[in-house]
Amino acid sequence: MPRIISPSMLSADFGNLARDTRMIDRSAAEWVHIDVMDGVFVPNISFGFPVMKAIRAATDKFMDVHLMIVEPERYVARFVEAGAQLVTIHAEAVADLRGALELIRSCGAMAGVSIKPATPVNVLSDVLDAADLVLVMSVEPGFGGQGFIEGSFDKVRELRHMIDERGLSTLIEIDGGINVRNAGEAFRAGCDVLVAGNAVFGAADPEAEIVRMLEA
Image: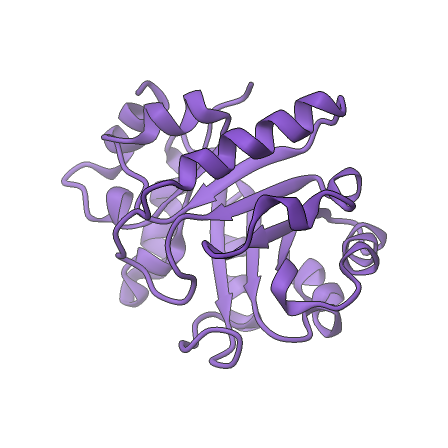
């Protein structure tokens, strides 16, 4: 399985966003994670299209965009136009999940689906074949810097079993409280992609910290 680190720009220095993005561009991280919050689906507001375009201009890395918004279908095409290569929506935010995932693919991006900590893995049973990636939230979505919710790796293992049993190539990503101390367990549980915010941007040497996580 691949080992990919996707640093979350939510933890970057917003006053030096281009600088921090260029640092990620130099690093061993393959992806850049963009958390989009609307203040409705989650109680916070973050990036919009102008900021996304600025980040896109500062890096050639794969753009991993996580929409924590209501009615994500309305905005998928615009996020892809702004540079998103993977668009992840929440299972809890849409009525027709398969249709929403197919819409993302039709716009030219990989399609991802995320589940909150309280949402069981089995809600994805009927749409796994339509998803390029599943994002398991290991904190409550909406805020950076939260502690890891114990038991999240059990969901990853269950999901990995479902994917492997069906012979699918769906990637598993995890976001929330991930750092060098639990990165190895995350990969062993079945994760392909680790989102890391404070663990990267709060480190004395962020580029070296990314390498340590990859080698955990």
